[in-house]
Image (cartoon, chains in turn cyan, blue):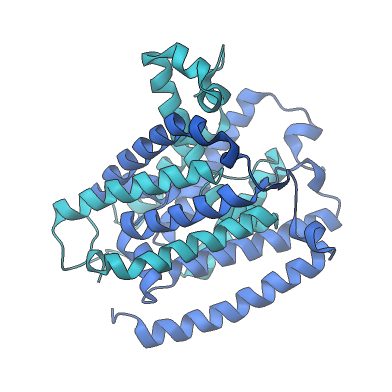
Length: 170
Length: 197
């Protein structure tokens, strides 16, 4: 199916680790992903209902007063992720319109569950103050206690739910 | 030069933004290389048929742990100046469990879904729309449980070594040993349950 095989996972992991180290060395901030999405949500809400963003303590942190939710390193980083994914995909001949799923479900069903799963992940990521990039990867490397606890919870939640949605994948 | 350079050299924000675009390219590149643009490959982690997620993630963490430890020892980075995730125990546990459910149902996490989008995976587009919706709902509902959101606050820069009274080197060593054992186990599991290519 794939034009080229994926890299050796250990090499890809070392590559990711080095990128993270460079990020820490230059900026001290590490990596992230879900924060860029949250900022996009707040930016839209600020256009539609600026006084609501002002009043809500959580949205205010990102877009209250003069703050522009898009003026943040995470936004530029995530645009880079998009470009980097395209570069790697293009080199490997993997840029192809498709839906990845198990053999037993339809595309439409997969899309519905992708939306639902995304909803859960998005909600949980904001509750836990970060997703797999900043919490599991960077918090894992800085050996932050809370990050390791959240990382264990992510794996626990996924393994507990896996049996119930096995038809999506196997 | 001692990092973080943004602080020690007082680099202007706009330059940091530009640098982050290139850091993002590296991040996205290696995620895609590792196969993280493919939701099914990610999800099979939770059926023990493909342990790429575990292998890539823990190799990256081990690389980070070793790197930060030596950079600190060489005086290349001031660890007191880097971002450490705060510890809020209860929202951290509940949020993590919810993320886990979202991972296996949706097939992606936020970062990998962007890589999926970069390689035109249609399911990634629906996942991203769902994530944005979930975050919108979070922003609208968190004022109702503000107290829970700030519960179990054990510290803003609480690292495992400080919490346990051990040294950073000792914790790092344990993580490395456990990861190496995990890799051996992961290879065995894949041989047993993995799909034939």
